[in-house]
Amino acid sequence: MQELEDRIAKDGTVKPGNVLKVDAFLNHQCDVALFDHMGAAWAEHFAGKPIDKILTIEASGIGIACMAARHFGDVPVVFAKKAQSINLDGDQYSTTVYSFTKQKEFPVIVSRKYLNAGDHVLLIDDFLANGKAMQGLIELCRKAGAVIEGIGIAVEKGFQDGGRLLREQGYDVDSLAIVDAMDPETGEIDFRH
Image (cartoon, rainbow, N blue to C red; front, side):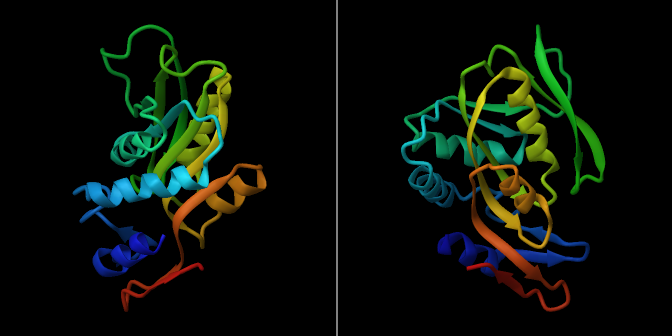
């Protein structure tokens, strides 16, 4: 998606340790017009799939998932929580994932009320690097008996294994921008085309 690549090139910052900061528009401050265009792009890619729910993980995936839902007939958006809370009552599905950004493991939890057998789910997230968060969402869907119709990613780090592994597992992964290389010294970002 050229618009997203242009925005990353303009406002993204490359940091040491393979970190790409896009907080000016994607995951701290949100550009909702861009999110809307991203949702339209995913709707075009996944047209014809019987998607009736979108699943993401808190917190950065929520905004893009909500805007994407508008393009899938306003389907419900469910987000996996990263911590147990008193608001999470009753039965729940949970698993554990390792966060590259936070450098720690955390639980991901979804109430059984909101993820059901037979749901046709589109998984959405802001970043795909090593794929651990996405594998966690896949595990929650597996436990629930939900059908994964596809995976929508805003920015994939193509030089890490997550996207390749998901595609090898047979998932339809639509990454709107794939970064093949980035240099913290020069700030240069190379996109896959």
